[in-house]
Image (cartoon, rainbow, N blue to C red; front, side):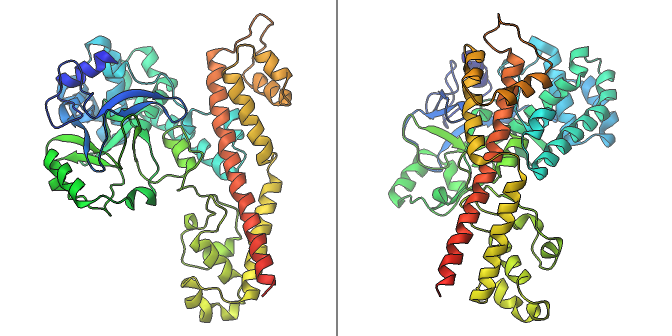
Length: 476
């Protein structure tokens, strides 16, 4: 890491407006720190930070993009250009990334590449056992689709990689999957390339979900002016108390990727970056993690087909919030569905405004929604309570020094036996610690169980919400 920070400083990466010290690009605003319960390795504030203050600047020379790789290597450029019409921008960036990996220490990005994770936990890395552990059909379909799409993209790019004389290891699907996961989970947006850029140092930020807390945070005028005096770039972006970037930065006219503090941070606090608004399934698909409390989470249930088509709402707007409340669109659709067909048109304006039609209509809506959630939960093979205990068991196994003792003392022996059978593993008595490949699979299995558990909790809360409203309405 120290060598990486020195390399980045030489390229002009800095966590302040001043020139970086030759020994490190950090230390003025940020320091690398470990947050074992909140994303692992990330950034801590080196001092108190103001909201909107520049915390990292990465010049274009440090960004790993397909056009930069091709500009440095005419042979790669020639081969990629010949295949350009058949390949997407993401495929081209993956090929360029693998080409740099193949160069080893001769690559200009070697220090950066050597710090990348050796494995990822995005949905496309899930095996069949882990995918089935999601339990919910929609989630299983998303995972299977992701694996199928990436394999197809690898097959399309294989002729180009062979033409570039990639080493056999770099031609393997699992290597392509690693490169895809790197691009999916670590790239930042740039205007000139749909695939984005790999941003050394900048991709060390952990994720914060956008919500209303940051955008409503007050910033007094005196503090804002002091921040502008110390950071002339704030005059260009014109922050005020109600402004908020969805991505907390971007590539600017200064020919650098600039990242800013999304809120006030005290010294030692983890400084987070908002990538955008994602559900937990989307976070798992693209980044390989999920949040225990995600304000942007959405839980979907199977609705009657006519209910999805009778209104003007997109299907993805018909969901249940983490607190169990139906979304505005779902509530409107249910109210419309509980209205006699010959009266739907006359009442549509009132329904679209979000108003309750009548006590009788609302009672019918709550009964239908609650029953649908109960039906969905009953169709799933495990309960949220059992899933919670399984998550605890899987975490213990990942940190265990004697897995047999943990399995024997738990009630999940059958589940773990199925896990071992899937992996064709028959561990003899001399092995008290699980192999690395099984530990990684346990990590993905845990993520799947955590996702399905949060899904069930949301539906359970919805059932309670419906029951409470039914009781209140029945008294009127």
